[in-house]
Image (cartoon, rainbow, N blue to C red; front, side, top):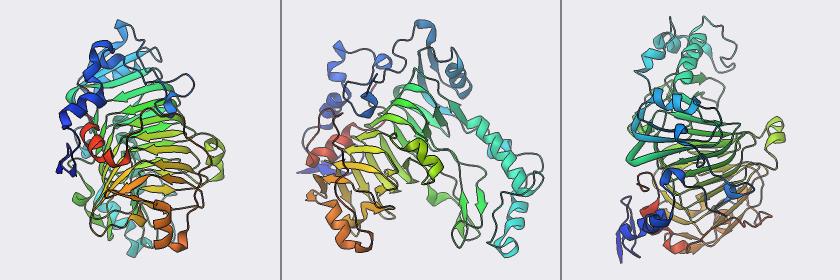
Length: 436
């Protein structure tokens, strides 16, 4: 028997979605649980439960509990009290985009002039724009980009819980910076991806050049004990299909949805929806030896019960880290490139996941080898059939052979659901607006 799941996909019916949502969000047992804003990460719930665990701002006193509904109020609440435990409750959708892209433009900036100056027919492809002076079109682009950067980024301090109240709480165009801090919880929020107003043209990026953009919806940079739960990350009203092209390349205005980089550690991402995006999640952002020194032995991240839908790639792409991905549902349609990127010195364990692949999308594409790093991939189902992802990949892409055995066994897991039931469970329980 089949029915449509909570996110509109055909899935095998097990129980009604309403009953399931009650079970997975805990509302059925709310009588003996703390209020949503005071909840902490359960014991053993992924890497963020290691050591001291993750409690966010659960210990906040009344003076450090804030309810906000606009961008200025949100940034003020983040700054108040430094790293003193705080709770920030978000009501409605907060616009972090600013009045318009034009409002960020530096004096003298002119996009038409930028296009004329760096047209490959004029500039060529043998040098980038990094050395351009401040009064050049590129220099004025940099100044304009700095104005947007200062506006849309919000720094999250240690010991903070940020939680959406109700069904429609979240941000449009915000970039949360969880940087160099410990003990942060972000739950029940929607994030419409920031739109970079001033992408940079790099003539040397591939033979044809590329537009490169900034601003992830959330960045976990050098931070520890972070729990991202029941959030929705999407391109919303500005998918890549709506973006123009210049110099024959898409004018890319999106970066990632969630990045975990620069020695960040002990992160759990659970029950989130990542949808309608290209470069979705990085765990480790560089192969360079200078970055590797800080990343080796860190980047421990758990992904469980997340819905990855209509993405192109990086769900996630992994370098260095011990990443545990279990009980996630991956839905792939036209334009799909891969889900798991196997990067330098990565130690990925991908088990008990489900993949719903459109006709013509091969199971051999689920894994992408960027570097030779063994992984564990067991008990995964593709379109309802148990599938050895490594064997299928190696048979279809023998030039990029993958090896089995990540070299470690995850121990920080709560209940592991049967992989065949995952599409229904995850589609009915993941995403923002589920927690009340």
